[in-house]
Image 1 (cartoon, rainbow, N blue to C red):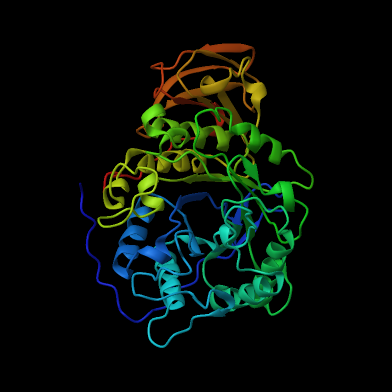
Image 2: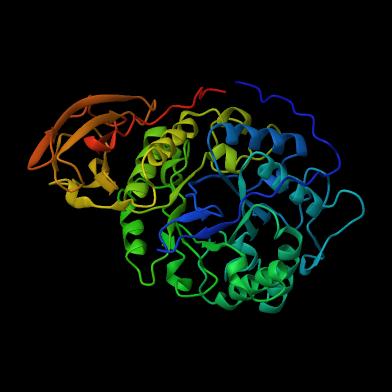
Length: 463
C-alpha cells in the first residue's frame, strides 16, 4: 500500500480563488468555462467525504485526484450513513433536531465550516465539488423505512442556506441521491428554487449549474427534463454486468428535446461486487470501468463519473464495511481504473471538442453487448472505440480531407502508434493490436491535412 503524503492544513479556513463559472454551451451539448473553453466533467464519487474525513485526509484525497486529472468530486452534505445522527470527524452534526430549516452553526469549527473547507480545498486544486445537498433517502417517502425529514417548505429554506453559504464557490449543484423522485418532485423543485435564491437573491437559474442524481438504471429526464433549473441530465447505470448496453441511455437522453448535456453520474465502480453479489459474480475490474467511460463519451456524454467501491464510502480501519470493499480507501485511490480515466480525457481534449458528435455510421457493424463499438467524430477527426479488440470495418469519407491518417490509441497506457494513411473513401477493415476482454483500443482517424498530433501524455500516472 502506498501511503498518502501528510499535508499541513491550516486550522482556519482560507478561501480559495474562485474557479471559472461553468455554463451550458449555446447548442446545449457541452459545458463551458467563462472563457468559452470546454469543460471536461471527470468526476470521482466521494460521497462521504464531508461526513467521514478529517481536514488532512480530505486535502490529501483531493490533491491526489487532481493530479490524476479529475475535475469534479461528487459529495453529499447530509450523508447517507446516519448522516443526521452520526457526527463528522470533529464530532459535529449538520442539523439541529434533524430539522433542515435549522443548520447547526455551532461556535468554533462547525459541520458547515468543514464542508466549506473541503470545497475550498477542492477549488485550490482546480476541482469543482458536485454538491448533493442531501442523500435522497432523507427526502423520498419509503413505505418500508421512511427516513424523510424534508417538506417543500423546509427544502426551500435549506436550499437558500446552502446557496448563500456556498454559491460563490466552485460548486455544481446535484439534487437527488440514488432515489426516484416519484411523489416528491415538489420537494426537489423547492430545493432548487431555494438554492437559486440563496445564490442570486432571486429565482435566477442562470446563476447556478444544476442537475439531479437518480437511482440505478434511471435518468433525471424522467421527472425534470423540461424544468428550467435542470441544466444537464444525469443517469446512474449502476453496478451490474447485466447492464451491458449502458450507452443506450446516453443515446436516449441525447436525443431529447429540448437538448441538454448528459452524463452518467454513477457508472459501474471499480472493485465493486457485480450485482452486489461478490461470491457469485466476483468484482468489477478497470476494464469494465474503461468500457463504460468510452462507450458513454462516444455516445454523446460530456464526460464520465468514475468510482471505486472502497473510496466512495472511505472505508478505513474501525469502520463497518459496506458490501465487501477489497481494501482501505487510502490504497484504493491507486487502483488502475482511476489513473486510466486521465487517458480518455487527454484523448478527447487532443482534438476540437465542441464539434464532436456521436456517429455510429462510421462503422459497418457496431456489434452488441460487451463487444460494442462506439464511434464519434468532430472537425477533421473520428474516434472509434473497440471494446474487446474485435476486427471492424470503417466507412471512410465521413470526415473532411482527401486522405486520412490513422492511429491506435491504448486506453490502458495512453500510448499512441501509427497504423497507416489511406484515401478518405470507401471502406477499410482494421484489426486491433490485441483481442479479448481487457484488450480495448481506440482507432483515431484524422484528416491528414489537419496535422493533428497524438494525444500528449502528461504523466507520470502512478503517484
